[in-house]
Image 1 (tube, helix red, strand yellow):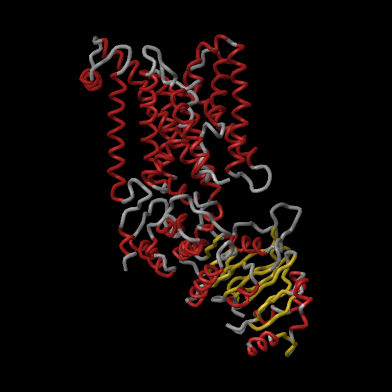
Image 2 (image 1 turned 60 degrees about the horizontal axis):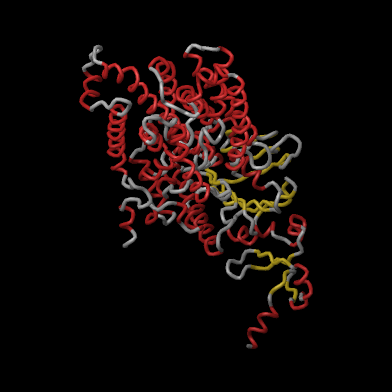
Length: 288
Length: 347
């Protein structure tokens, strides 16, 4: 396996008592899109912080292309790996262009000022994220989706191979969630290695090549969406009774939680090949 | 595409929306400041014409009484005003950027009161301390207060949030100020020496004290300009700045030293003048936006201008008496503070 990011025996904690992530091992291949999923407090965001050097490991190491990231210079790492924290806020009045220009920070020094090349890279990032027309608009006046795209554009201007994103779709309307995920998918197609924390299992299954499911700071399951999204895994990771179906649009697995109300109506579903399909609904549709 | 034209249009949320206006704007501020300084020098118990002011500056005659007044009384006073205004405004701008707190200001975060307590202690303990001691005690007091407020404000979940830092500053100010007052009411001699100073005053600032204090402030201002780009980046938030490869610990440490030099020096020179650091960076942002490479020089000039004008106001409002300039600033700053707290503070 062509391992690009290599996590070895990694333990992370905010104080010394409670290990949030405990002796975790994980390999991530170049050019893939990985989703970290799990219940609240499972350590997925903490793991992302450990991957990006926002949090120093208590034990173990993270290697990027063979180099220990915690032994690298901050600036050198920032030229190879970009991170978007969860719902970042821009200072009031900061324009999209100014925000994206900050992405050039690791490529500049105390004395080297803005170059033509920097400007070109910023313009490209604006085009990619479809924000050129908003370049001079303050970030805080944009819609949630545009705002998130502006932050992604900043990370793009950083020109890193690896992009880490902590819940890039949180607090966004559904349409904007898809908008941001599609953008990330485009970036992945262009060769960026993407690792993101996602709340929504179905989005993870749709967009990720690999899903890593965590619980209690340890990996419970990892692999393709088909391998990870099983009834047993969902029960084990989330403690949730659910059915797994096939997403009618993409063919990827789709998690449908049962819940107490759902279990009363379960008789309406007919089993088929170990998965439940929405046959009764289809019958009803045919009849009408 | 019609939207494309918007890219070229100036930013409507800033007065100097087009980047080409920023440098001319800065030069205009220098011009306004020089004008205000000259006006301030002409005002006083004896009105002195601008011509005489000009002559005393460039063609000094030590037998001319007006020239002597200008050189020994009025010039040090206005220079002190400019330096103190620039120092407090830049300190406020750095603190606002660093803490992402629109209410950050060396007065509100307790640094001024720490510095003034230390200076009062120096006068109380040493009687008639050499002038170099004022600045030193100013720095010690400012540094200690800054560290204490950060420590107090970092307790609990979420670390040093704007609200907690502000509360810690307010609490420390109330606490330290009561000690300062206790010393002043128990010791008549100390009170007589620095009564005006404790309210923030430019009256009676003389050249020797200015010479002892100004170099530190100038170093602080230069340092502020040098780290201005770093402040813009860290104003996006700690995690974002770290993700961009910034060594945020270094930036914060340097910025803290600069703030202590600026606020400590300013208080040693003119007492705790409040609200300058709060008001001025917001005014600067109205003109230039959010880039600290411009906010800092604009803040320095507007701060100098504001204190100079407030000092003029403090002398002409209740003539022939005068108010301490700190009182003048409080009258301007308090309504502004309420406006800020009402509209700009989200948490």
